[in-house]
Length: 110
Image 1 (cartoon, rainbow, N blue to C red):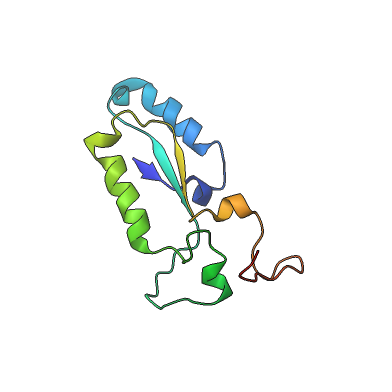
Image 2: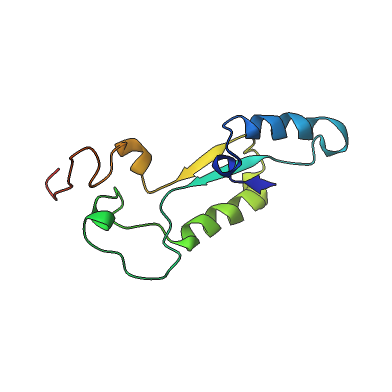
C-alpha cells in the first residue's frame, strides 16, 4: 500500500495505517510507506529559468521520478523498507525557501 501522507492532511496518517496493518489479517503481509512528492511537472513542458535552476538537481521533477520510487517500493528489493515517508523533491525541502518568496530571488551564484 502506497499513499501520499500529505494528501491525507495528517502527518500521523502513516503511523495509523502502520498500526492498523499490524493488527488482524494484514499483519506481516503489508508494507506501509508513503511518498511526499515535490514539484512534479505533469505537463511535459520544458520548465527553465529560476524555477528550474533553483532546484538542487537543476530541474523540476518528472512523473518518472515518482514512478521509479513506486516501482522500487512495490518490489522485493524494498522488502526491508517499512514505515517510511520518502520525500521526492530534488532536494528542495533542504533549501526551505523558494524563488520569489520573502523577497529572495535566486541567482546562479547562491
